[in-house]
Length: 112
Image (cartoon, rainbow, N blue to C red):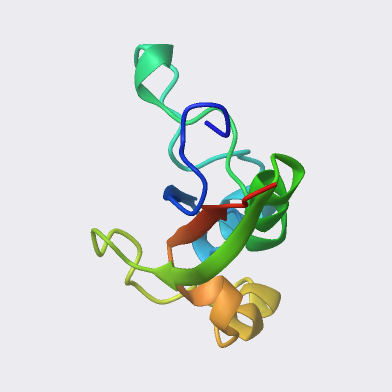
């Protein structure tokens, strides 16, 4: 992307949030990813889900600067309450990085 994007132009990255409380609840219940349906075509699912810390690091390594970052719920897929039997998950759900299902990063190509 750095090679084809002109200096000063922007790149928008988006991914499901690895830290969303429902992903953590699934992990504690023994499932790696709630979006994995093993009968689905592997070309139509996420193979890697990132946290904000990880997703911010990717453009930096490719000589982009982060212009903006945010958590968002695009599809209202995970608006229910955390399960009561996972007290830790309920506590995490009150923190911003665990509340929203998606991460967006707006990265700008540097002039160097």
